[in-house]
Image 1 (spheres, rainbow, N blue to C red):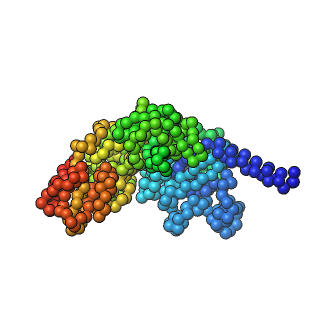
Image 2 (spheres, rainbow, N blue to C red):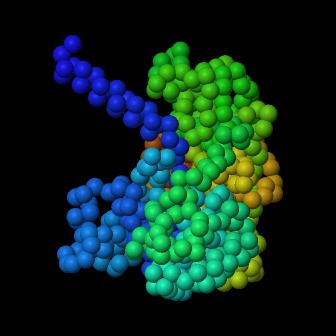
Length: 533
């Protein structure tokens, strides 16, 4: 056998071994949080550098000229702060995601901003985390942002939190300072409801206790930050939960195949399992589980799959396939914790769009139960929430959603609120209590489809947007399109110069109003404070 062939086979074998070993490692997702200038980006840069997960050309790009050691001349923050504005201002603005691995585990880091203005980015970056690192400046102690981020971590149900007491080099590596701040953080954790908390003294700039333990803090006998990250237990909370598959797409390549594709949000599914399709409530059994690599005997969250059913059920994008033995609540009125993400304050009664899994429905906030005073972590009376405000609200949807409580399922228990007029994401919510369960009967609701001339359609569109109603203006005369818009809870304004303004009732026309905007809105029951039907 030629030597070159032997070397090629050996190289192939080693690569396959390496890839198999990498695939076998578990994954830990973690985020960083803290106040401005607590050293989050510097910590991540140091972690990547000392664990040898940074390319040489990247290191050269962020190395300052001058004397001293190679490590001391590196601006570690710039290893993650990639935006020009971040470099100019010296702060993190957007979430920076980085992947790295060690011999024991793979990691995805979300380096999130510390400035109060970008709290929404922190909530976004932490929403999928298994662990949060909250940095505390050893000189300043716990600040308002530290409390806010700890509270958000508790709201998001993050299983593990590390209090990284940073800049220990600036307090002479004082054991007394660390003990005091560790005690303060554990007290805060107990108040906000964090379960697993570990305090670690570090110096991100000098590298103390980031990857390697050193002799400058002999009084500390715990793990370094990386040692803790490598060994902390990753809780797969969704594996044992009831099966949930939000349908993202219906796959129909030919007449003999009809599959429902999506990412499993929770639980495990096997061929033969009894399922229920919601909101229709019809049941069937799983016939096959299909993936690009072939059929599976079982599949668990968060795998993306296509399932086929034994019966022909009418299932569309936005529907949910769930365990027939443990279905979710069909809710149109529920209480939720919310982080407000927009400059425009929350307005009671205003129409928003609520995105839940792959489903979008019109919704309104009925009440603000309370807002949280971040300084005291106490509830306060409120009628609205400002930017970065945190509180508990009551939400009512026009069409029911298929929700689990957030504590039981982070995917089907969470939602976002969208401003229908600007399409801006204004709030991130977590379902805490189902207040009313109901399935809407379509026969009891008049479809919201209006045929009108161009001028009336334009006036109606402007008025409906002012009232906060989701609306689409179109010249498409396909009734299947009207039906799809109507089922999504959107008012469809269909421009037609050949007919008088009419409301489609079961898509058979009948006159609406007297031709004025107000009369059409009254007929639709969309004017003023009247409810949709």
